[in-house]
Length: 297
Image (cartoon, rainbow, N blue to C red; front, side, top):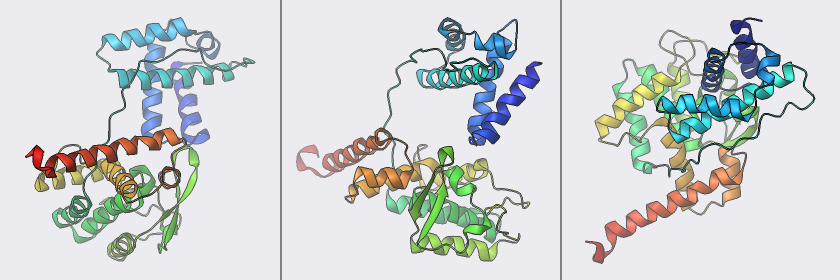
């Protein structure tokens, strides 16, 4: 089996079998390709024989290239997944990957934007767009991220079948898990405005959000539009599309939402992923205290 065959099988397993996001597929395939480049023999049985020492050696090579702790941890996760898959392909009775701890990664606290900033960003991308329908599209996408707490990949995976939006939208998230998210009137109206202006037919099984030439809208286009709006509004570089989802979570928590409900709304597999927002909220309160307390002036 050639290197291309191995990588093609791995790609199809991730994209079709596991339904991972395009970004994850690209990253995991690239990690596998780097591992194959370092080996003299490349077939499933040879890969299945790789143990923790082999993974450590590969990770050491990558760390020598300047890989950060966070990137190294992601690389190790991808390597272990690839070895587990190789062991399955080789017919091993126990396909579990080698046990190996990754580098410690300090979880950063997401920096949310304020509600006004979120809405201003959405309307600024609309005003700066080349065409009215494109502006309506970008505003609708950003409001879905902030108003419904959706990941950008989730918003862009919606099809025309989601129209017309009701009070609740069923979203397919990571691992093909579905969850129901509430849709605010502001968000519903923005999506309806885009649908009315879009020059392309929005069939039930076709992408809802379209690029300028009618193809599926890509994340890069949304990120570029938001970057320009961020500069125009004088917001920090941390004001990205994903920051709108963080803001959704932070503002709900600050308004009294409990962690379990927030976990369901965000589609987090574990409560631990949601608990970081308690730190965000505490950080926000501390900023308010520092800015408002007379002794801090």
